[in-house]
Length: 248
Length: 259
Image 1 (cartoon, rainbow over the protein chains, first blue to last red):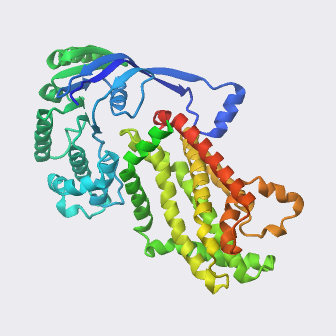
Image 2 (image 1 turned 135 degrees about the horizontal axis):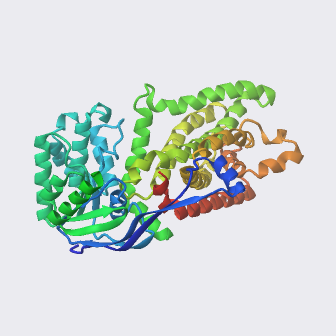
């Protein structure tokens, strides 16, 4: 359990048809004409870094720098084209605004559904359910279909389930800025507790203030390559300078 | 490889359970007649088909109803499962794009929830069986075997369709169009003996022919199906499952690039 996350010389290649062929008809026609041209695009190039257990790593970079691809590798959603990815322990990705939820089902049913997606059995969930519903402060809405929830309520529900999974590694993608201030405080407190218990966090944000505030180390990605990796203030300063120079 | 995939599915069995429950509740929650829909719809169809076909084929209304229902309900299970599976990966794409989930689970849960619908749809058939003078025979105990063949065949085709639909969306529409003639190439609304001998081979090229025959024989004839039919049904079911599984696992890791 006390092993680091290790990425060793990892590259990811997207190989997509130049014009997106979405139909079988087009595919047949184009293959006959010999017109299937593929475009190769390296989303990540030779990425090597480690995250020791208990550390919070901030990932910064512009749109299309490869941040999401990197998180997908760590969440095991994608496999690298080259290199090795080692992620010891259970990973719980924060799902943007409840991507795992079904709007026809009630709050309670959705908690069980998302829980099982994240690997909690029904029996475990029976034990955790009360704590989750208390954390969300939505006890009165648990039997209401999700379509009647506001987006803020859905986010709360999602956050509460993810932290109840008791993961070793948490992936936070631009999610700390949701909910009202009181709920944010609650989330921050929980994250602090999670880290004290030795949990590892990968945090992607465009808010450099949040990166500075929370992260032990930072990683700056640009066009699929690591531009800088190390102490948070140093990396953030470099990135800010770069952003300034691009804007000019 | 196979062993890994199976242990993984066991790990995610609670998710499978929840996905089936989700399918069923979402399907029935908002409809007033609830679960009765899945019984009512084929009954209405039976009335229509009986009026049309029992007079054309001079079959006798009572026999026709049993003959028709025993084939049609199984066909419906196959058709509905495969159509639902063909878009299940596209629908759940947002989910497995963010979290690791064995993709096969979406196909399997779709087939299971349709299997549940089939078991409801068979209730009227078994109620009608004694009323229409066919009665219950010991041969009914054999039904789980052809049912297993049907599930294997359906899962295989569902794997194949859902994987293909990720790359080519129009497969879904093409398949639905294709289903119609396929149903008429399976002896469901007409008896086998009206088919001219020289065209019989066309039906015998159709894998669903063996599965439907295998399932209907114990209900309609009250005896075990021919061994030859059973063997061929087992063969087409195994081949379908094997090809579907191999294609699906080969491309499963690349789905996420195309969602």
